[in-house]
Amino acid sequence: GENVEQHPSTLSVQEGDSAVIKCTYSDSASNYFPWYKQELGKRPQLIIDIRSNVGEKKDQRIAVTLNKTAKHFSLHITETQPEDSAVYFCAAPDTGRRALTFGSGTRLQVQP
Amino acid sequence: AAGVIQSPRHLIKEKRETATLKCYPIPRHDTVYWYQQGPGQDPQFLISFYEKMQSDKGSIPDRFSAQQFSDYHSELNMSSLELGDSALYFCASSLSVTIYGYTFGSGTRLTVV
Image 1: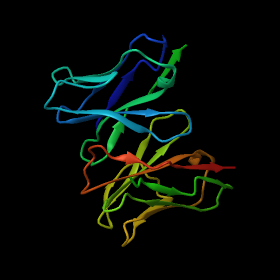
Image 2 (image 1 turned 180 degrees about the vertical axis):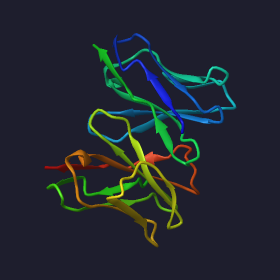
Image 3 (image 1 turned 120 degrees about the horizontal axis):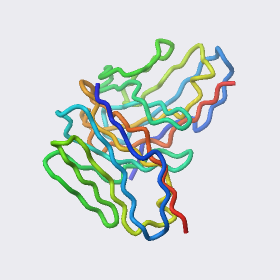
């Protein structure tokens, strides 16, 4: 099945700085890469996603880049704010199943 | 807009008991997915249903079963509960088994004591 690796596991930045979280995937046929934000005890919320026919997608302070050749994709958050503090998960389609395989998560802490 | 509804929000059970979790998909959605998230873990896919038939199966234990009903709501039945079953259980729904952009319900926190 699909294997998704995510780094780093924890990330601490100062308010206003940028944060970058990286993921790699194993199945070259994967074509959809969402990012979820999860606050403690709450549901994962989709914040941005990208399909394999584009290399970059941006939504205000959040952007995702995809390198299909290298099989990795990244989440970029600019001008971070304390409310960005949460666990972020990347995901990719599970091989052979119509479901998602998640990365292990990154705990982002934005220091005011 | 209506979202995915899960009940109950919290559930406490003793070991070896049974539990039933319910999921009501977004109106007109015909596909339901169940995920289990242990403490500090990423969500793990358990099972999905499309048009009341099992669609895909993930890491669902044999002690668990699930089904989707005629109104498209789904129930996850968990028997012989173990301490390790304590987790957040999330349900998501979509139209025609697409994984694009599907959103999760608020989850059920199951605690087995």
